[in-house]
Image (cartoon, rainbow, N blue to C red; front, side, top):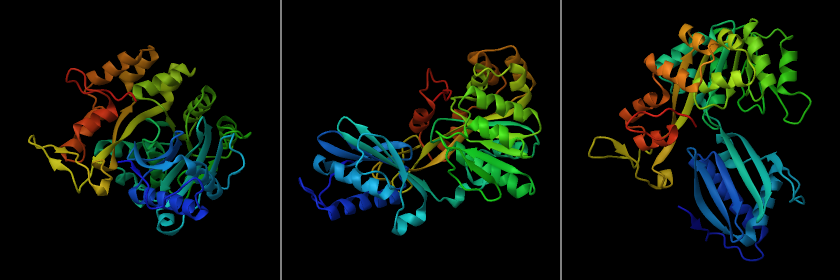
Length: 398
């Protein structure tokens, strides 16, 4: 997929206008293709440009090494960064023009010094009205109905787990919109680092990474502000976990995210953070684990001899064979049998064996509905969830 740029030839002394056009064209192309990130990676011999398309990083173009510094300098100007400091990491925000500006809600820039020069990554956040409503995210009907039931509770903790970029923040934002719409008058507050999605009717508080108002400090203060629903961007440490669990025990509905492979793993991580087993079983209502699986490009997918669809690749999907992603998920509610196992300090294997013995449908099984409808492939599902061993469906541990 990678190719050498010919439209704007650049030599040892590229013109400033050439660099401006190159950067503008690459960013516009990234937006039109739906890329979530644009990587500018210096190698010494060239500057590699890569797009993250549907979660996978793809090489797009190679620019001459002579233009590398100028391209990054142009990005710095757009992001309001210090162009004369090449020895420190810097972060900023960009403003796009034209059609691209109407499609994105936020554009962030991060620059980092490396052996061969500065590496820059542009992250793109899109305006997607379809992802604002809980019913449009793509959850299985059973999971969606359980989430809506949890949203009506007056206390407890809902955890959403999964790797980075799996849509956790989008899910929580949709749940909060559902609460604001169906239960008007409730006091809803979020603590986020940073605030990624604006939600009408919700008080959103940005937490700065290196400021004095940390998650624990802000959460303690907010509990005195008479909130009924709280969303914490992420449980990152033991102190935040402890305050979150205590809030869920004292008349607050609290939601947060964690980086964990499975629902059972998230519950055990709370115990490893020093939360007492009885506090976990008394506060946590449910754990959702989710992933985003790539969906086949409608323009080029084809059916094989077994009646399943496979990826091909065409200009519309930039040769990847996939265009867009769909949600797969599993939800575990903390019931009596699971509570007893947690109180008995069962390990990860014991908890997962317990869930499997109860006929619990995991995330891989949820993905099979997408395979059956021709939206994705078994290979893509296995890549997202893990490798199938001895024909058994895998457990997502990523």
